[in-house]
Amino acid sequence: MAEPKAHTRLSETVYDRVKQDIFDFRLLPGDRLTETELAETLKVSRTPVRQALHRLEQEGYLKLAFRNGWNVLPFDFDRFEQLYDLRIILELAAVQQICDAEAAADLTALAAIWLVPENERLRDARVVSENDEAFHQDLVIATGNAEMARVHRDISEKIRIIRRLDFTKGERINATYDEHAQILRLLTQRKAAQASILLRSHISASKAEVRKITLHMLHMASRGSRSVE
Image 1 (cartoon, helix red, strand yellow):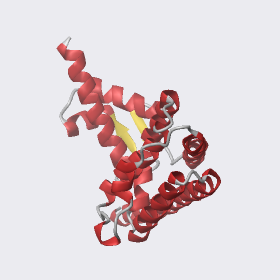
Image 2: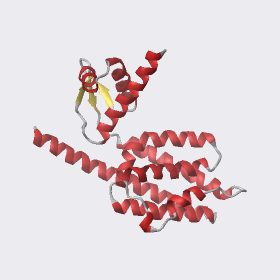
Image 3: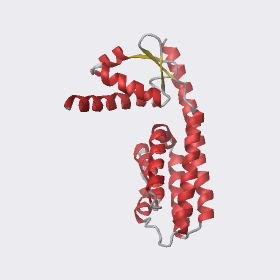
Image 4: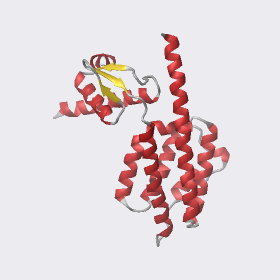
């Protein structure tokens, strides 16, 4: 039984590495991978490599090519935008349920993170990204609907790597703190309509910013790749 578990762990490592390379633009659309080369680079057998690549194929990042090769597919912006739109639907429902609930939701833990003076705001993009994801998940969890929370977690996992690009600029970090703080204040006051308008605008702005940054980074990475050639 130890060997399958070991393969699962190695497959997860390979999956994370290749997916990260795609989202960090070290692998560009059209680039080719082979199981043999990847296994040699990562010093693992081909079995976990194959498992990881098939998983990435199912998620729409790779396509099986001729003779044991894999091609990196272009970013599917339509799919990402659909996932963002589904997030909006779930979180707007969560806002309404929180405001309509008989007992007030406990938002103190979120307030401790987001209702802080400007000089206490975190600046590490990765940490802020993780806190942002937790903020939105906790809003859904606060409804007490476990199925809503499960679906929301699944969406968050699918967009996590691209979503973190939204925090590569200082003004976006500041905007996130400002908007999260205002959303929390409105929820505390049970102002569902105002909170919903702000939440929709907040997520839509993030979606637009991520698309813009991704296109720019793809362009710059592609130019760099051509200059090396």
